[in-house]
Length: 375
Image 1 (tube, rainbow, N blue to C red):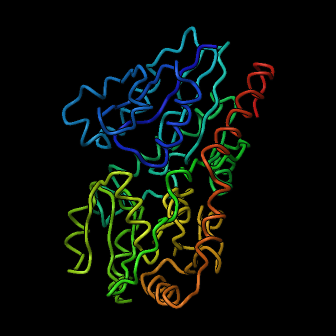
Image 2 (image 1 turned 180 degrees about the horizontal axis):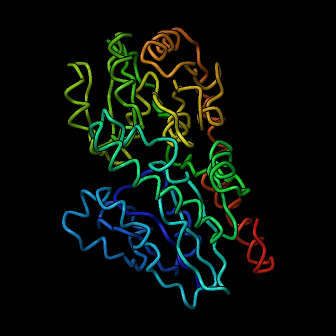
């Protein structure tokens, strides 16, 4: 069976890339298609595949400022040819699910989210506070409205949607009018585990940790403000276009780590008093990596966190999307008695092995079904 994998862009190892990594292991001979590939930013399991990029790759500053070319993504993704392939699996949160496949080729789309820019997170990226009132109203809103129509219109190109959470399954139903099968993303519970050596008590309060791309909808600014209110030191692992703005907001008790190695990240998880998920996530792998290390999570009680955090057992959920609500919950978490073994056991249900087995079962079932079937 000849297989092609499609991913929006390859510029770092985030949650979507960890799903792609498993797909690359399931199909070691598959060809990989992506809009943009920044070499050296993804794992060897991904890099060793033959990668075909779009014309966007050759545009000025595309590797660093690829989001500036968002209006070109629909045309670019539709230029890939999949003649001769039996199966196309797209890993999509933007445009990858809209590839055009031949009539004999099945297309399964692992959907991390319908295009978030065009639907319910427009203001986070292109609202008046981000780009100015006139640009937001007269340039970005019409452009993103066209992208939303295109995003919905291309949903029938997919034979079967796989959602990364029940939350995203609801968005697929709402925006695409399609059903989906939920397969949670993979967590490397073999690598992320509690420290086998019990560390002595810290002389000062252990810091909280945020692990996130520094982009607007992640709401890292909320975590910075909340930690200042609660008097909790904060460490931030990750990078992105919002870093300068966030550093201007942060005080002396906030440390920006930038991109870190997996080994360093594991150490950060183990040393943290809690890992913060300050905004609404489609799923969120970082909280489960933290829980695999026995570390509790403080997360907004919306989106994927409702499926990954057991309130009062593996962490605490803060009810309102405000810094004050998060700060109050951080104070409560500092007094809570969490059981690291119980936290770890919860994370093991999201292991890479479980993810790979479920994903393979979906693929096998789809390939055995009539080509005309839509799920």
